[in-house]
Length: 241
Image 1 (cartoon, rainbow, N blue to C red):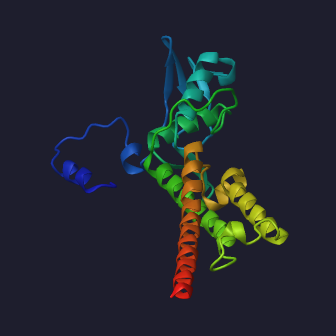
Image 2 (cartoon, rainbow, N blue to C red):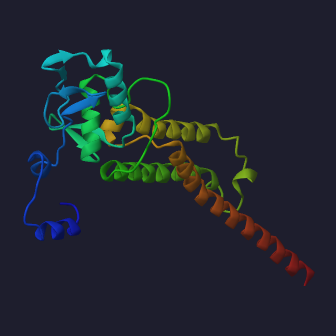
Image 3 (cartoon, one colour):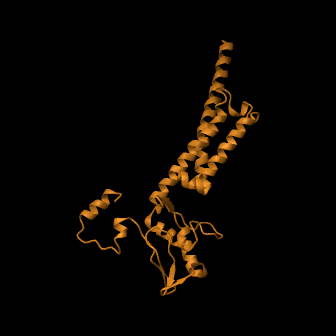
C-alpha cells in the first residue's frame, strides 16, 4: 500500500470483497471483456503481458476488423497516462494499473501505445507513476536548457548578451544548436525514451520548460543592466564633484 490512510482503512475492515487476488497480491489489473452494443468480446491473456487476443463465443476474432472494438481500444489507449516498459524480460506498467490494463488490451490488438489515426488525444489526467516521470523529465529538460542558455550571458561579466557580438561566434551557436537537438531527441526518440526513462512533454509543458530555462538568463541580464547604469551614474557624479 502506498499511503498510510489505506493501511488504516484496511485495519478497520473485517471483510474484503475482490474479484480476483492479482489486484491485491501483484497490483495488476487485466481487461477481461468488452461489451459493445450488447455483444461480449472476451480478452485472453493475463497480467501485463501483451500476448493474447479477442474471442467471440470462444472463437478468435480480428480486433482491427471490428470498428466498434477498435474505437473502444483507441479511446482506452489515448485517454491514458500510463506506459508499458520491459523489466527483466517481462512487461511492466508505469502508472495507474487500470490505465495500464487498457494499454495492454490495445497492444494485444496491435494498436500500441499511440494508435495511428487523426485527432489529438481526447483526455489527459495525471497518474502517479507517469506523472512523476513527466515531472522528472521536465525538470531535467529545464536544467539542461538553462545551462545552454546561460552560455550567452556568461561571455562577459559586464556587457549584456546583446552588446557582446551575439551572432559572431559560430562555434557557440553550433554547440547550442547541437545541445538543443540532443535534448529534443532524448524526449522524442523511442529508444532514448526507454533507455533514459523520459516522456515527451505536452505543448504546455514545453512552454513551462522554455519559460523556466530563460528566466535565469533574463535575471542575469537585468542585473548586468542595472550594474552598468549604476556604474555610469557613479562615474558621472565623481567627475562632477
